[in-house]
Length: 350
Image (cartoon, rainbow, N blue to C red):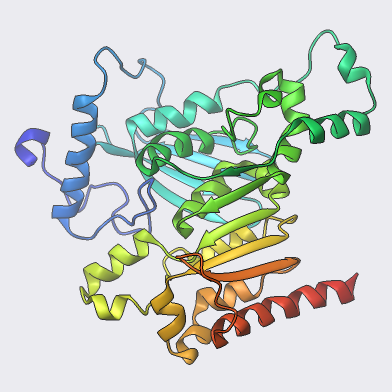
């Protein structure tokens, strides 16, 4: 691999080494030089087989050690060039006003995707006002509600989403340009209509995530407008990145099947707490885990304790990954009761 790359990985100079950073798929940067080299080689192969004639325009990306910050309200995204040698040469530091932070290591191409959206204009005003926008805002919102069909959102191509859509969306902390759906023409009429209709579109969409890593990426990508308006969510309480990390540390399938994810659990719940309109949450667990895990291990797990602290959710359902309800299961009943208690506390405060 090193012969084809034309360089060797230096443990001291490689960007992100020694800090808790992740690739765009939210897998942590490995400590082993072999696996770092393998990721570099995979990026090299993607670049080699990419369509000929495509290149990043000169002068588009920041120069070495130059930081570029994108701001939206209290949210910031800082992009910094750390190397002119490696495929993964840029760091991205995402900091939301709520205290959430995520540190990534990305390629030149991914950095270009971020800036391609960051440079798009957000101004939604126009010189002339179409007759539709002379209607009262509440009337327009009723029209949007009728025009926007209910739908379901999910990730079909994970690798493409992580490297492309997720990266582009990072460049827009507002969430205005997130590609919610190509089946909602109302969102493509003009900028003002998109701005007004987008919150309603989020409220009428059920988001289905097969992995908490995907949820973290989604809730960063949709920006403030998405987090403020998502109402319905299906989430599988598992993590590919966490499973791979645990396997590297202890490759014993019997142990892994009864272990809850920890790597991104806190960040997952931290972002869920920013979904102020979230009212329906379906949680899916591996059947072997929810049926066989020790009650003590389940109830004291940091991620489970965090999810028990969610407030305001009116409907909670616990299922297996096979979509089978587990209402008869003691741990599932306990989890629902804990979350229901927080809902009742919210009612008392009102």
